[in-house]
Image 1 (cartoon, rainbow, N blue to C red):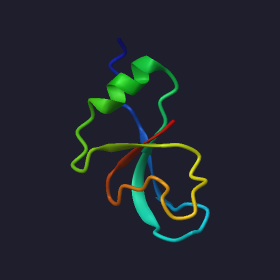
Image 2 (cartoon, rainbow, N blue to C red):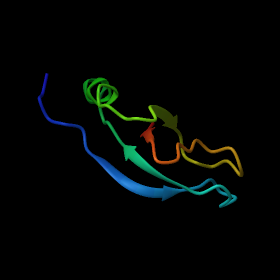
Image 3 (tube, rainbow, N blue to C red):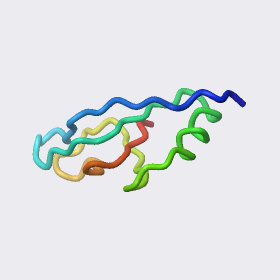
Length: 70
């Protein structure tokens, strides 16, 4: 297993309706090994999975927390 620390990008996200915007740490693991390493990172507000963000008001947002792009 690689000892690389998973990287994230800090972004402000919303759904298609552009309502409820939130600043989140966005992780994008490409492989299962990377996902496992990502989920081991200490994030105070935990992780939520995020799809394409094509929801008008209920897209996955974790304000000041982490999202895993699926």
